[in-house]
Amino acid sequence: MNDSLQARAPLYVRVDGDGPALLLLHGFTGSADSWDEVCPAWTATHRVIRPDLIGHGRSPAPKELERYRMDAAVRELLELLDGLGVHRFRLLGYSMGGRLALHLALAAPGRVERLILESATYGIADPAQRAARRAEDNQLAAWIETHGVDAFARRWAAHPLFATQGALPPARRERQARERRMHSAVGLANSLRGMGTGAQASLRDRLGELKMPVLLIAGEYDEKFTALAREMAALIPRAQLAIVPGAGHNVHLEQPQAFAERVSAFLAQERKERSIV
Picture 1 (tube, one colour):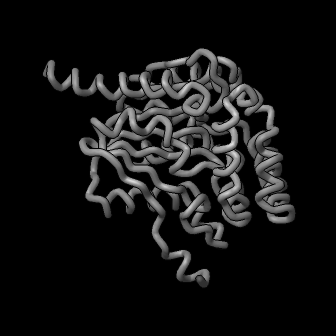
Picture 2 (picture 1 turned 120 degrees about the vertical axis):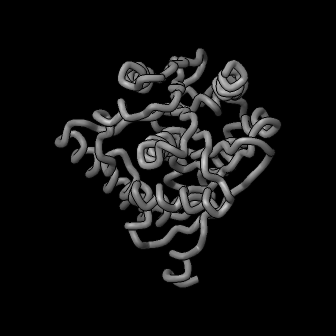
């Protein structure tokens, strides 16, 4: 497939269940499959929409960097939802997908009914620190292109952020390893260049614009992101905070039942509010 055709190809998406729309955005090196263990908890009450984000899994991995910018990714998701006939939706994003979800909620606040951010950040406020992180992301992107996806998957699994995942059952670790290897080098590299933390503008000063209910989830062992979740909870008007015991960065992988139950309870609050009204 040539680049021009690939650039126009739609995102791969899985849709299950019936009811109000719930859009799930996976993290870096993830895919729609990342949600397999928790998704059944929501399909009885929601129409669950799970795309492979640009550069990941079965979605296009074009060479053009502009396709990977946050604003382009937001537009592509809104076009996907429009094509599915979805106007208003609930939104859940993890890590990179959480940052994208935050951008999406701020870009289309009238369409997002509830927002759930798992292990997410608003970006790096200090310009010098952001530039340093952007340089690190670019170096890692070049490393992926040089050494390939299999080598990167092994390197990424050894990142300190995921140290707590060493205690996972072997079958769950192997499933995640297979998922990390399913991507292309150009897709992962450009995701870092276009959607990495270093490329993202800080949204800290805009958190007060979020008027919808927001649930912030982090794992108790992930000190950096529990601190970020607490800070964001203080800045978002209708925020709720959930620190999940026994989990690190990837809460839905490490504690799937607790994660699914907490998200389900948050989503059910809307039904209760409507019944009261």
